[in-house]
Amino acid sequence: MINLKYIEIYIKSKGVHMNNIEVFKDIKESSKIELKKILKERQLSRKEILFNERDIVDKVYFLKTGKISIFKMNENGERKVIFILRNGEMINEVSFDKSKTTTVSCEAFEKSIILECRAKDFIKVMEDDFALTKNILVHTQNTNRRLYRQLKNSISIRIDKKLAAKLYRIGKEFGVCNGEWTLLNVNLTITYIADMLGCKRESLSRAMKILQDENLVKIEGKKVYIKKDELSSYFKST
Image (tube, rainbow, N blue to C red; front, side):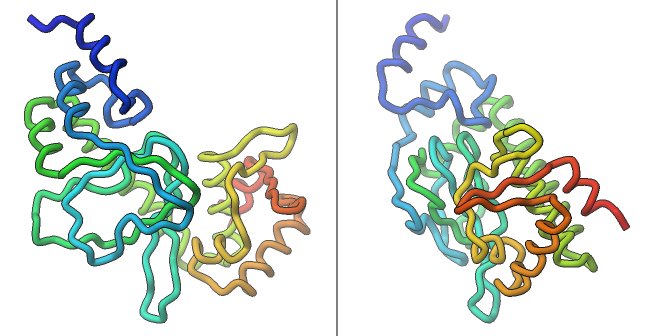
């Protein structure tokens, strides 16, 4: 019989803390012990590349602290940011085929700490813990839903509405309420937002001006504020 008190003391005595990783919620205590053995901490500097598109990635990564950017490059060498991941999120998919390359690139949006382990070791833990496997499936499902929303917002929609939808989503994930306004608590530039939408900086600036004129967005220095509910209504309107 597993001594839960011993396991708790064992986990707390080690340097790697997994409590905030979403896919580790409600898994077996024995799985936490095994994960503690195989996971290693790694620090990333801002803009440090974790992996590039078409790399063969034989590890699984989790974001402990910081923010991670997931992006693709188009045929013109222009960057399209897909996600900005936050604390506790799983960074990449679990690859069961060693010959498959990754379809995206990944870099640190800011100074970050990640947890990493070999994919084959992680799969062994999944095999013995359905709760962990289920969490991975839910994570994949949620990622796909986010991609579907992005696809919907990228088809036949004006750039100002695409921008409104993107700022609304960022507000849900990183927003800090400040009266009627919500501060986007992430270091965004016009160029970076343009990368997220896959458009030119000039087009993004014009769209941002439209939202500012509608009193949906305000920019003070490097801080961006939005009105979440009004932005939602704006990009959903016909």
